[in-house]
Image (cartoon, rainbow, N blue to C red; front, side, top):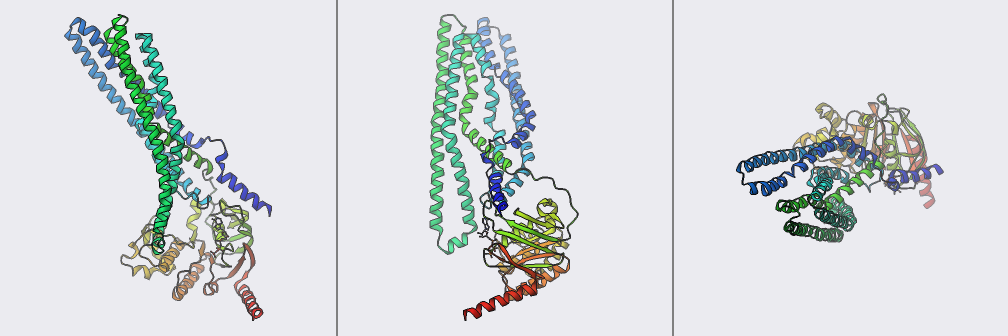
Length: 587
Ligand SMILES: Nc1ncnc2c1ncn2[C@@H]1O[C@H](COP(=O)(O)OP(=O)(O)OP(=O)(O)O)[C@@H](O)[C@H]1O
């Protein structure tokens, strides 16, 4: 079946490795473009701030060259009044500028949060586990914070460098040349800073993220680790990687720290030297004493943003890496296409030559499954371990795309349904039942709007109502992410209540009885009968015969392919016959 391999190849290349394409990050760029007016306003206020920053210099020039020589107190008081007013205005403009940037950052977060959230989840699905990280959401909030941080102001102020230099040229050409030279040296220092830190910081960050997700994974399995005395080995593994992060970060911080010190020292030195140059020119009567001091102040002003750029380069590099990671994610995971709204499904399930390739893999694990189920019918899937049962269940639910053939619900390909619209009509109890942090009722109603009546109906349908009432806080009992105060069997049964919440039309149960005793299994069979009688199509993966006897049809899987499919009695009889033949052969 060559088309399966092609699909797998395409899946890997197109979905996973779009990173090979030239990075354009159109979506992220467009989002930033949509808030450009905020940056324009911030630029206008920056211009006003930068013009007003000349006020103290002009004031000083006037005081030196006019007030001191004329001894006019009224001129001094007028100038001082004007200075106070303009400085207050400058402070106000600076405040407005930072408010504008805060508004811009809130806007970008609102605009992208939902999309990044969806992409983060879809990424976890399509990468088959390697992309299970909340990093994109952290990246978004850090990027937003950078947009409001001080570092960004440097980018607004830096373009004013030529204007300050032009004024210095007017004072004296030598002043201008010194400023240009100093600016060039500072830019070289900033560039060197970038060159030595960026790669190290990027490596350190991705390693740090890996370490943190490994630690989270270890914490989730704390019991296994403690029981088998693995703490020391896990700690050492974590420590080795944490040391690498530390080394990379230390290296980057050391180089950045050295270059920042050099840059600061250089700026202070040049500022003093220009004062000396000014004194020389004043002695030669080429400039006034006021200009001598104004020159030094102007140089300080012109170089300040460049100095700030050097200081914030680290933050800028981190923000750029975040921008690239986010851009890459949004590029790899395009927004969900709008699907046409379909009428509520009745539960007609058809599989046509279905083939499945796990995300991130190239090998098909299910091939050629064809079957049809009517509403209210139950299908049992049996087969040895790793025969593709759970993979087929995921394809039936549309969590994994089919690599060949079609899974149809009410005639429409499961992939063409709008997930938001379809979700309430589907119920799923996976093999590893994950309950979420919250109360039992929140878990049962899938964290949607709590409807006590529907919650109790679901609990009764799943046969767990009495069990829940016996718990200390009943439906309000808090359970942690790992199931908290519940036993394995209780978790499984509450998972079943969550799956049947809202009267779904298609219910997929992956080994729902793995943690149940005989009594629990009897209750499960009764629950399946109740759910069936409501017209829900049920797919159950199970090894146990008690559950299989309550099914209508059975599919037997082996090594990813269907071995037989048909009415329960017929398939079970043939399975029984086969195993008796084997036993007779062995005897
Ligand atoms: N995320 C994945 N990425 C790659 N391969 C996978 C993934 N999940 C499952 N597989 C492979 O698919 C094959 C079928 O696995 P699946 O879980 O569907 O089997 P199963 O019949 O449900 O097994 P069991 O009865 O043990 O639960 C296995 O060989 C497994 O290694």
